[in-house]
Image 1 (cartoon, rainbow, N blue to C red):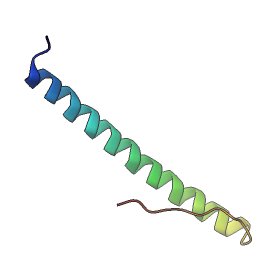
Image 2: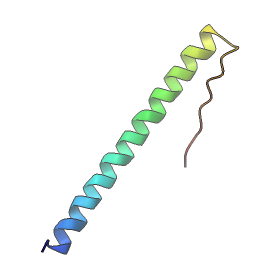
Image 3: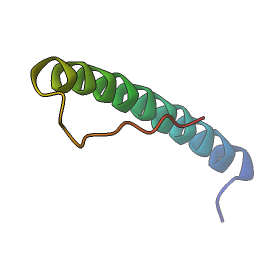
Image 4: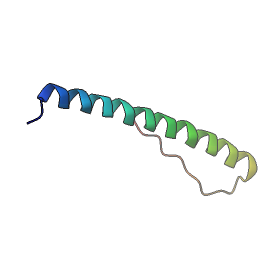
Length: 51
């Protein structure tokens, strides 16, 4: 049986990793949006901001 404190620590680390990935994706989406808006104003790309 796993130690509950170890499981909690692992889940907290996973949560931090996922938050960092979401932030990186937000940055990438903004950069891609800027590139798209500068090249083709008729583009259908839309960015959805997540809380």
